[in-house]
Structures are given as structure tokens and as C-alpha cells.
Length: 358
Image 1 (cartoon, helix red, strand yellow):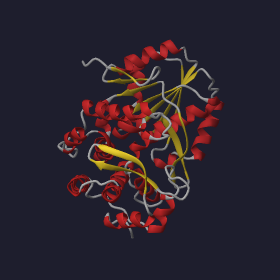
Image 2: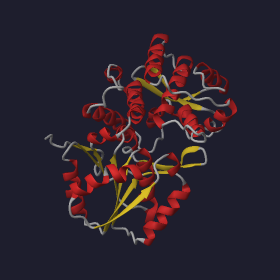
Image 3: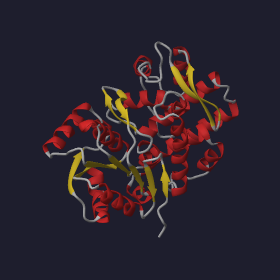
């Protein structure tokens, strides 16, 4: 058995990896002397993951399970109010612990729930999807959607700890693994050219990423966050592909065939690669390499929308300043730049090149 390795997130928060991570969590809970534990799950993690977790943790304080429907629609004010009410009825107090067991929707929603109930309860994230492991569960961003704006309502609060158990990836369908892989590819593009090379040589259609690859992605993200926790500047580099990707994802949620987060972000990165050529001096050979990688892995992913609908969402992006549309772009593979002003006309042209406009 591998020994779990403990990584310091900051002076208080921890990430545990591997088979023994739950042993660390069990000790953590015992030391915390919590009055009760609230597990936030969806119907999938309730059936597939929660029994294993409870068996691993053994004797616990009073436990309650808060189950929500799977899917992005759950990250809503309406669901959040229901969860607040249930926690109140079940007499959660300032000494309760929230444990979020699920993918990015659960860690986003559960973190916001914990951060706002009684002005903030401690919480632990146990990501069960690749996307949540490498992105959503760590970094301290928690939030819900408002209308068609992704993560419009939220707060910054780190979990007390994160348990990364790669074995949970075996429960995922292929498209969910591929969705998370998009964020890993982004990490290489914005910060580590060698990691990008490693990733593009990996056959995501046949295998799930290794624990070492997951560690690398988390380390890249954490290095950025350590410099700028509240996203005043450098942390914005993590948003490459997300300005357009979030707009695509938001509009797709209103259709009968919504895209997964990573699928929308993949289309966003293809589009923002075009913008990087024009605004960040990304070379034509590297731009072509990036596009060919994404077009091969996500060849069956497509989406069509009207320019005015996409631009409405893009203009509401959090990175903008006044009427100025600002993007995170890349100057070369392995290096991202933030706060690049881009014209509406060039955004529309890039969307045309990506064949997104209806």
C-alpha cells in the first residue's frame, strides 16, 4: 500500500493523496471534536462513494446526509436556500463539519453552503471526478450560478483539507474523465510546457490520468494561488479558455444536450488560441499544435449559438473592467498573460473560426 503524502496548502489547509488519506481524515475529525458532520452528496456519490467513505471513517459524531440532484442546475440559489433550511432544522451549529463528497458541482455548492451558514463552518472536500480533483476542490473558490452566469455568487474560503483518492476515477464514464483532462491541458498551456508534452502523449481515451499527473496539476494551480488567493491579478491566468468557455457552457445548459464543463472549456481554449495569436504573439506553429490536440480529443464536441447571445454572457464576465473585455491568453505554450483587452469584433471572428456561431 502506498503511504499517503500530505501537502501543505497554506499554514492550515492540507491535501492528502492515496489510499491512506481517509486515515488522516479520521484523525483530523477526532481532533476537531465536532458536534455533527453533514455530508453533501448527489445521487451518484451517495450510492457509489458514500458507503466506502463511511466504512473507512468508522465511528463518527452525529451524521446527516444532504443529497441533491446531480448536474450543474443544482448550483442555484433555490437549492442553496433549501440546504440552509435543512441544516437549520437539523440543528447544525458552529461546531459542525461539512464534508463535500462529489464532483465540481458538489465542492462548489458545498463550500459555499459551509462558508455562508452561521457566517462560516469548516469543511472538507473529497473530490470524486477528475475535474474536481485537479481544479474545483482546491483553491478556495466556492459559488453558485445566477441565471445563466457561471459562479456569479460566491466567496473565497479554503477547505480545512482535501482528500484526493484517484480510485474514485474508476467510477466515472469516459466523457467525465475527458472533461477533467481539459483543465489539466490548460495547466500545461499556462505554466509548464514539459507537462503539456507529457499530457498530449497520454491516451485519455484508454486510460485515466495517473496520481502523479494529478499531483502535478494541483501543484501548478496551487503555485499560482499562493501568489494571489483572491484573484486580484496573477491568479487570473487560470482562466485561460474560461471567458468564452463559460459563455458556451452557460448557454448549453439551456438546451436539451448541455456540455460538460471541460468540453465547453476545450472549445473556449480553441477560440482563445485564435485570440492569443492576434493579441499575445502566440506563434502560428504552436497555435496549430494546440488546436489540433483539442480538436482530436474533443472531436465530437460541438455547439452553436448566436453571436449576440454569447456576447451578452461574455460581457458579464468577472474579469472585465467597465466596457473593456479582458482575456487571459497565452504568449507561448507554458506561459499565460492576464488582463489583455480584446475587441468585440475579434471575439466574434474567433468564434467564427471555431465554428461556434449559428
